[in-house]
Amino acid sequence: MALYGAILFAGASIAADVEHTYEVSKGGKLELKTDVGSLDIRTHNSDTVEIEVEVDGKNADEFRVSHSVSGGDVSVIGTFDRGDNYWGRNIRAKFIITVPKEYDVELRTSGGSIDIADLKGQVEANTSGGSIEIGDIDGNVELHTSGGSITTGSVNGDLNAHTSGGSISATFAKQLTDDATLDTSGGSITVRMIEDMQVDLHASTSGGRVRSDFSVDGRVSKKSIRGEVNGGGPRLKLHTSGGSINIKEY
Image (tube, rainbow, N blue to C red; front, side):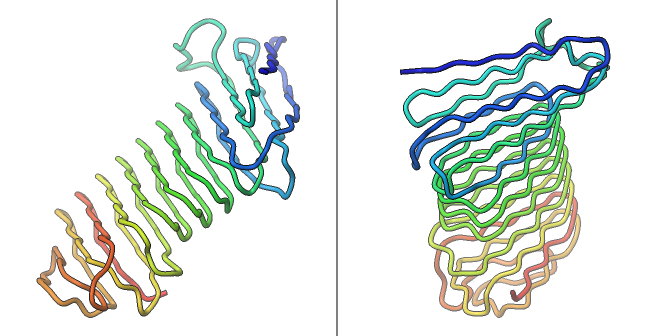
């Protein structure tokens, strides 16, 4: 059974809120897509998804938020009522969504930052105009931003992070169990990992230097490192076209 809700903001210059709570079960999925707005994903010890949306600006009357639940999955969609040509319009939106600690999230915004708290589940986050910051994630992670930095906590699963216009900072506080790839076209990469981390390290830069606090059994130069750290393990691939790479002890 699916339940639905929607609101169209009215008024020439307003500040408006959407608040709704759905009962779900852990292991479900949040799918959030919006034409504009920052995304703040929080967690709690409850089998509910709490939706809060703050919208203001003189063009807020052109923004529509709809939400629905089907089984244990929740969908939230933010769209402009008069099409997707919203550039130059005066509108600010913030989505604050609280999910169970064990929950998958799939997020996409065309104009804002994304923050995700610690959780157990699969994470996919994409923004065209902001930074991405995630906590400790027990699950596979895919992160993409066209115009900001990426910061990650520890990830227990595959990690793929790409930015076209910012730096990447990642922390590995425990042994990697799956491959990780960090790639940026316009910034530096900083990785902090535990002293006894076992990885196959592939690090390269076109516009800076590669520095490592770890001994590497392999090929090491100013612009690239390729080899085993502490006997090797999952592949850790780091690449930047426009900055330096620093691999530090956590």
